[in-house]
Every structure is written in structure tokens, then in C-alpha cells.
Length: 296
Ligand code: GLV
Ligand code: MG
Image 1 (tube, protein in one colour):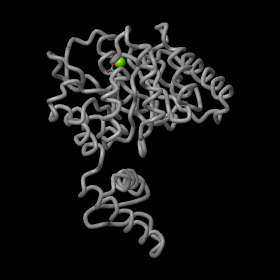
Image 2: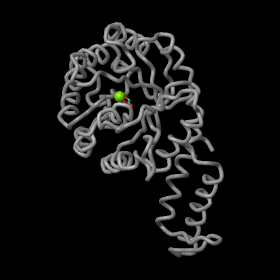
Image 3: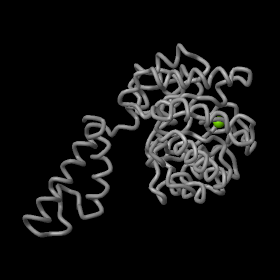
Image 4: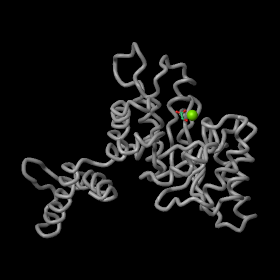
């Protein structure tokens, strides 16, 4: 999920050529207050005129504590709603914010003659209130498609003592400072059948660091991660795709299980040294689906 500042037409152009699944054109924190109005226009033009084939097209509007949100939504959706798949609402604190956005989108879709309900919502969870209310946020609208972790804002909002986003805070040696947050988001997302995405890693040149932090989310079951720079794109695609060996093994389990349950009519069977049953089939299906999507 590639982040592109809406204020930079050169980046908006370049983003179209990168191998990412989703691109989000940002009107929020990567755009200076004085540049917000110009950025809205750039984003509308980029959506209408760019070639985004194969990519989910998303815009991040400003959060509801600002004065910009309603104009962001109206200008972008009226101007380019037919070329837009989703909006990201950042710093969501409770479900009423999602209901507000849902209602506004419905009104714009009706006015413009767009299909009502097609444009989705991704909610960014970036503070304690958002995390505590995450189940209600996840279930607040049929438009909800994903929960997105915002580690930088989150760390600031809970006073976590570090300046390096995604890395363990100095002095914390007992475990993973992010484990609870990531798991909490994952549970809320799965409960409501949403995708769940990890946020940015800001040390752009440290690709090994990016990989390490991305692996943590991928291992738990997250669907993806933000990337801020072309250097991070290949690493993200690699980390979120299963390894060839795991993929091959998953396909083998599926094949063997299919054979034993249908031809031999047995439930639990041995595959080499490993016992496989219906739950193994489900686990294998998760890996196989990701591998097939990645073209392994
Ligand atoms: C992203 O928006 C973050 O705050 O990490
Ligand atoms: Mg943020």
C-alpha cells in the first residue's frame, strides 16, 4: 500500500509505475496546511487522468478534528468518484466518524448518479481511543474494507518513549511493544471480515529494518504494509508473499488431503511425518491463496 503526498505531482506520476496493490493519494499529514487546497486538485487530476490499472485507488482525507475533512471528501468524490475505490479516514476514534463518512458518501453518490455504496472506507487507528473502540469502528458501516495501523501517531498519542517508528522503544526488553496493538487490530478486522494493514517505516534507507518490522505483522496474519518509497516496495512484496517452500508444501497438503478424504474417505491422515486433518487444510489454504495471488 503505497503512500503518495497529494501535493507532489511528480510522485503522483511516478507511483503509477510501481508494482503495488494499492496506492493512496494523501491529503493528510504528508501535505502542509498551506498546500491542502492545491493537493485536492492534484489528486482529482491524478485519479482522472492517471493510469492506475491493477491498483486499488485510495485517497486519505484529513481527520475529523480538522476543518478540512468535508471539503476533502466532497471535492475528491465529486471530482473523481468514478476513479476511486476507497477513502482512508485517519485518526478514527469512534464509530460515529465512520457513520458520518458513510452518510456523506451516500449523499454525494446520489447527487452524482454514482452507484451507491461502491466507495469503501479504510479506518486508520492511531490513538488509544481508536484502539479501545476498534470493534465498533470495524463494524460501523458496510463500506468498511480495512483497518490500518498508524504507528507514528499512535506512539505519540500514548507517550511511547521512542523516536523510531515500528522499532522497540529503548529500555523495553521484555517482549514486543507492538504485539498487543497488532493483535487487537487483527482480531477486530477478522471479526468483521476486513483486511488489516500495518503502517509506515520511516527509516527509508534501512531496508533490513523495514523487512524485520514487516515480517512481524506478516507473521501474525496482517494483509499488508505501507510503503513510502520504491526501495520498500520489493521488500514488502517479498515479506507478504509466502516463501516458495512453504507454498509448495501448502499445495501438497491440499492435494494429499483431497485425495485421502475423497478417494480413501479418511479424515486425519499422515503426510510423511506430519498428521493432517481438516484444520491443516484450512491453514494450507491461507498460504496457498497468498502464493497463488503472488504468482508462485
Ligand atoms: C501514519 O499515519 C502514522 O501515524 O504512522
Ligand atoms: Mg498518522
